[in-house]
Length: 455
Image (cartoon, rainbow, N blue to C red):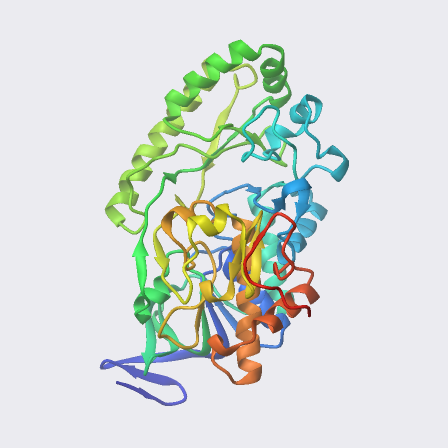
């Protein structure tokens, strides 16, 4: 039972200060949460954004996932747009983003040698050379700066260093949250709450149905003082010798994607999205501590091997690991609609699609929990099967989810209506007005099973 007054809230016998009362509360300042907050604010809502770390950006910045991909359908049709496009343009103006111009998006060895080490390839294609596509290599600190700029410009009330602790729920409706800070526990009231935690923290506390998932984790890191020109010249001049060294490097790191090092906008600094470590639970404190030990040991093993064996890496040094462990999957919402692997692989289009990534579509229902009012999710923990999430969890599509969720939250406030009653066509219309592709118009390769009503 909860009793309220203007400054204090009594929660289960504990008197908590109410530090804010807002229209929209976004919990989690990662890429999805930031987009939700900015989008809701730009649509007229009073917004508060909570983040546990000292920075914004989540896996994009703190986790150093330094290539934006999953934005391109067949034929290099850029379909994941809106706030993600704004981020890229702002970072580019700060020399913090690199991507191929449209004329370089081709399938030939010349473009492969020019752009593959930036991560701008269609890794879904098996043949070689893989097509060069629109993808963006970026600097993590540029991401943090742009994030703060957008928050400041949109008037979002930012509360960093605030750990989500519990949800305030009454009669099946979420009314706010409790956070843990250095100053103690605090309460924040809200009309609508966006769970952008990545792990469904708010949804779990509010009683949302979910499944527990698990995927590889990674202690991402960067190396500096790498002569990338020399490294690439050796790779392309001596392909067979390089392949042998590359296989040996993979054994040292113990698991990696097709390219274990990629260039970044900072000269001489390379990004290593490895090691891949299976079997760890991203919710477990004990597992995450063990992963830190193992990951850092593997990182140093690879550095020693690279310095001794790989041309261009002779003087390489460890610049440092990401501030956040690379977690790809934990708890997943089981909401009004559960996206399946077949939905993703068949490119199934939904009438209530409000955002998209690559060649797949996300319905509004997949952002809504069952049986809980005033709560919406955005990010990798949306309502999806475990195997489907592995194919639809990249940063840009999560940003698009956040942008759509922020619009939905603002529309719910304006219309004084529950989130599940917000008209998805209104969300689609606002997404388009903001320069985003909500997926309302299916691409030619989509599987359209429901008639798309003309706007």
